Length: 620
Image (cartoon, rainbow, N blue to C red; front, side):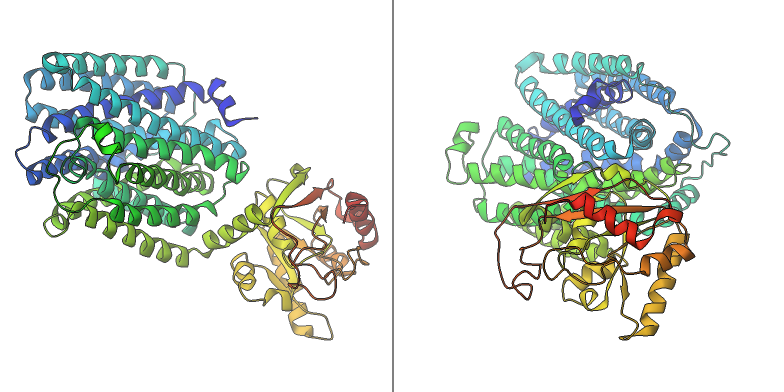
């Protein structure tokens, strides 16, 4: 099933268009306002100040009211909330129209503040409703579509705002009518959003923003990976706010471009994020693949720093159209940098949003999303303040360089706190450079509950390949000398692998390994063992040792037989003697086949060996 099929499903399609129209309208209004105040400013400093003030007003309500919004979203049925929020948008856009027609900056900034408040109420509903309507394997695709739709809406809102604001005397009348009609269309789409039951209908709402803010953040901190993912998302918003708010003065004063050049730059970034967000589903094979996060962070840093080197020095002396910038020495390089910064930002953000949704307590999910929004808002307000301060000492290209270097440092810090990100990145790189993996009957591995996985042992990376194929975390039992291999040891330790030794090598380590396996199964985890006890020396399956019988005697759980194929002869196998002595080439075809579950009373070592041999067949 393609992720685009979700657009035809009522459980997703109407909500997608509601979100799309809301994002389009917000950006049509915001960009029309930014163009109005930015190009009427008398200097670079005044223009930058007004643009950053507008950005601050838009995000300030997230900081103040998100905790209350999260409680409301957990307490009430969500489709009704969506309709009420979209109804409020109509009234807010009517006020914005008055501000445009009177050219009253005070009214326009007030409408912008109300737009931020409306978005604050919508935020927890937006991300907490998806897990209620989508299955786990659809979360990445659904989030990718939402991100793609959001940034295509930003693109369209940006382009149309740029076009409308060049219509001369009638521009403010046209934009006034458009924002009201778009709000009405969004409300109409929201009427088809299906019911999403309240997660905590008995919740008593607290209205003290400070108390509830800390309580929501406390809920987010209960699961370490969720909280650190929120930190990553918040950093992305800091990065984006610091970066995007400077594009108008960058286009005008560094590139020497007119209003259409601003639109072009924002369009390049938006198309990049849309493309990167959609690419996530394909690159992750439908799983919540957090290994894409370090990949995204690396690309964001690389191309942000390159944007500094691509930018012309000094203040532009002439004003150019789009074609004038494109025909310059720097035009295309700047556009490609922006496009790729956006694409890698999409790869960075979508897995983090999906992970937060999947691992959050469903009874508190909206409040955890609210905590995310609070932290996002705090980071964005800090970015707006920092930009105003730094621009007194740095040029805009230098600010981009600062942002790129800071992104690298923050990413390294987050990944040292959560080694799981780097572990999944190493696995993802392995599976997308050296091998092409074909997985058969992976649905035989249960979505929840304890089980033992048994598999033939062909290479040093068997555990990584199985981990790449399975949606759930797996505790691997592996020979202690393989567990200690440099680099791979980092991956195995991060995955909480269980090292084991033979009785004659280290009887104490062996006993501890069986205790750890029993504890993992008691907690409902998946445990994978390689019952042969050692790597294959000839590509064939060796005799299964009785360790699996000992495990099942202590923890009677279902057993899933699996077979790996195609790895014999690779650099990680022992074909020809020792491993790591030959290179078979990139993109080798390998396979993993999973058999039906075997109940513990029938799962002897001899029978499991027979089943694994049957699954492998003649393939090696």
